[in-house]
Amino acid sequence: MAAATVPLPAERVPLEHAPWRIAAADALSAVDLPPFDRSAMDGFAVRADDVRPGEPLRLAGAVAAGEEARAPVEPGSAVAVTTGAALPSGSDAILRVEDAEAADGRVTPTASVRRGLHVRYRGEDVRAGDVLAPAGARLDVAKITALASAGVGEVAVHRRARVHVLATGNELLPVGAPPRPGRIHDSNRLTLRLLAEHVGADAIIHPVVPDDPDATRAAVEAGLAGDVLAVTGGVSVGEHDHVKAAFEACGVEEVFWRVRLKPGKPLWFGRRGGTVVFGLPGNPLSTLACFMLFVGPALRRMHGEADARPRFSRATLGAPAAPDDGRTTLLTAVIAPGPDGGLVATPTERQGSHLSGTLAGTQGFVVARYRGGAMPAGAAVDVLLLP
Ligand code: AMP
Ligand code: MG
Image 1 (cartoon, protein in one colour):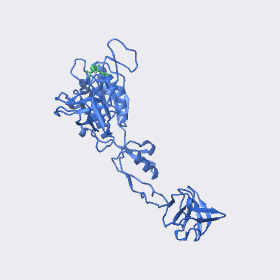
Image 2: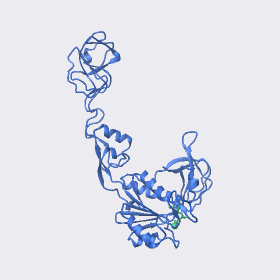
Image 3: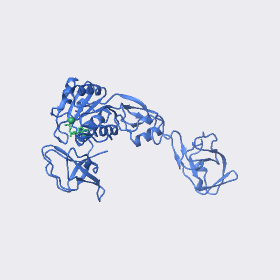
Image 4: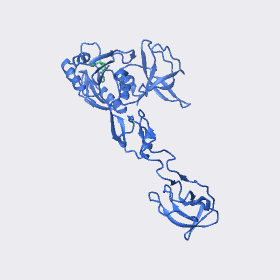
């Protein structure tokens, strides 16, 4: 699957639109930081060698933050400054307002200062041209804050993936529709939209597709317009499963079908040109599991993440688990911090790919690996936390 998914092309976006996206090129500081020598305190810019407690200095002017420092500090004088103000020429230290008495155009120090005291020097933080976010890095709060401070207004990021979402099934009712005999409510389209948007993709939601070969083919063709097509339901071998035939009719080349995963075994993966295609089993928890392990990582890779593997957290098992050994199994679990602050994961008593109600009380899955054997309470396990 990794070979079929490549980072999408770069685009330049305003910094305001860049948070959480992945830098497509090194993002450099536009300025020195600080951009000029500045005061770290409210007080007086002075020549350190002139300052002797009890000996008054002449107050020669004032500079507030945001102003240009015009009046120089001559020997024997001081200039009032606010925090963040540019350091006037001639001065080399800041006498804090708490360490001086000012009256009648004079400033009398009550403490001595050393050269450089409370001065923030130009470029001591970063230099113009320093790399603040290397290509491949996520533009998180730390990096966005640094880039904004460093005068950067625009950055190159990988384009967002466009994910087309289809759900198949004659039984499906739209979200919130009144119940009808034999029908169930569609949840997969909403789940996939949430998960896709959570990893920064744009989701395009199509109408529910009936279990009919022609309708399925037409819907798949329409859904192949983006970077990813995710279809739920109809990917097994039942007589109402038309999705694989539709993929074939639309020229989607199969890369694999079926994985050793529970829930999620019938997962189908293929591609047509630059579009990758997932056929996901229809049960809500199967769709969720396949997204967490396959679709999400593919999207993250398209978005430029260097390491787009599924993100497992570690937890302590709260109760023994002995899952069927034939496949890697994701067990719905209550996952919460334990007494020592680490996560404790307790699988729910009932497990099943259709149990969306049980899902409501859980925070994610315990991963019981293929041939991993029985897991006693207290074992360290991998968990997949749901967003
Ligand atoms: P399928 O993969 O089409 O065989 O569907 C497997 C099970 O998932 C069936 O019980 C379907 O009714 C159910 N299902 C299929 N699609 C959805 C959906 N969009 N939302 C909720 N359940 C679904
Ligand atoms: Mg179906």
